Image (cartoon, rainbow, N blue to C red; front, side, top):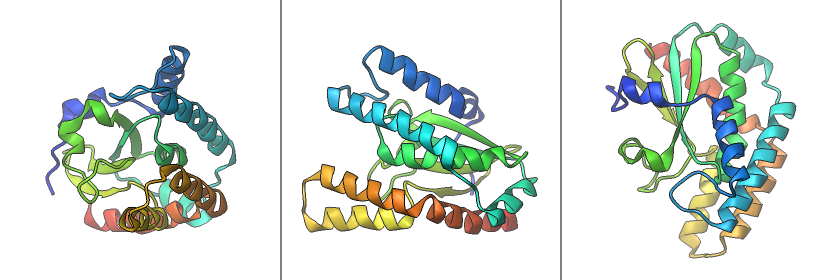
Length: 204
């Protein structure tokens, strides 16, 4: 599959460290990333930067995935669409970064969703701009290998069930998702990436 992501887009994408530095800089100005600015979104961002820091210290990549990543020599770019106020980004991006660090061939790059609608609109989930959305690309030719996101499948199902129910209390959904993430301890996303990496390896 040919990708709509141009090389110039990859060049302007930022690293995980640069992403965190951007968040801190904006928070110092009382802001968050994205087009919408509000006290609520800024508060979510504050919680998220702490959550990311906690995950960086506590996430342990399982042996099977570690072995797969350290032996993964394919030259890939993992381009992730994100925003700092998004709880699913905070829960999953540090895990993706840990994975990428284990492979000499994988580079994690981040684009802000609202600044790149021409990219985001090609990777919608059920018609929505849900994030994080990871696009896996071959570095040498930009060929798209596949995607992941916007969240582990059980949480995605949780979100779909919520929308289908007609409920409007999104805070309740957020709390339910947070409880799931805490209990799961990144096991599901790691299992999903074992399958994805093997699949992408077979296609390369």
